[in-house]
Length: 370
Figure 1 (cartoon, rainbow, N blue to C red):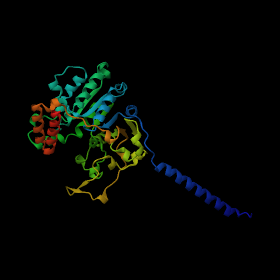
Figure 2 (figure 1 turned 180 degrees about the horizontal axis):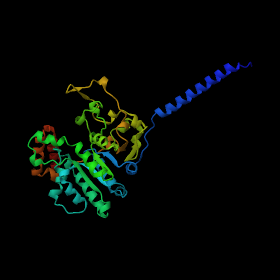
Figure 3 (figure 1 turned 90 degrees about the horizontal axis):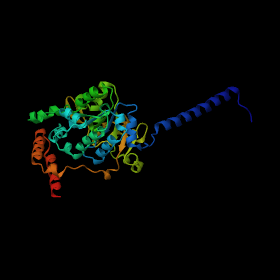
Figure 4 (figure 1 turned 60 degrees about the vertical axis):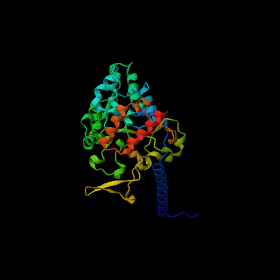
């Protein structure tokens, strides 16, 4: 076979090398871009492991979800928890009674009438905070602390603003306290946890963890879109490790339906992390922006996408949606006329829709018929 001239042979060799380099680079890029499935680990081990590199770990609380509350209590009861964590910041306790809960979880006997005001007298006019699992949580922390020396005991920080219901006489009075519900816990964590070089587990509802608000099409409008996490991270430079509770994850990664319950998985570089964050929320059908001082809808063709891994770091799987059980009130609470009167008055003061009061009445009527 005749040989090519040296110059042509060199050019051909360069071309072949270039093609091979391009092919190799393309294959590498494909491997880097294609997300892998998320891999589950034991939920408690995963969450405690996150504290190795993070002083703040947040689990999204599913209000009224019995499995979520049961998991939180099992996490606190794990012997490794008190060895790893100092504080637990909760949404369902009024900061007005921080002294009460400090004394209670440290073993002091507190009259029940005083203790129940911790979860009963929050800014939330509805009855969600009166579900029995809230009280069970505080009692679980007290039991965990009982055998521990004072320096090792867990502290519960009450993150709800210290509303004084005796002074609330109108919807406007109530609104002033509601507007504190993001910045108040952010400031509390900054001063009581970070400034003291402590580590805290935070448990709040999903909406308080959005770094960028999906309802605002991921735009920022100051206090209208600020969340506990966005405020805290901006003020302190400390990143919160967010664990998003399961919300139909099997629709994104089907094999999740076979994961053990409960499971934990990090999402960076995975199918779960690459998915649009809107798929994780129940707020994907309506977006608004502010133009010339007015709230206006955002046309569907202008909706932005944001990878879920930019909003949270891990997921907590508690089982398929069909297995989730809702917490319920007790017969004793529903039969307490003074309590029901108080709750209805607060719902009316806060301007809640009549459906809220009717739902409580209906559920209580069903309980009392049993």
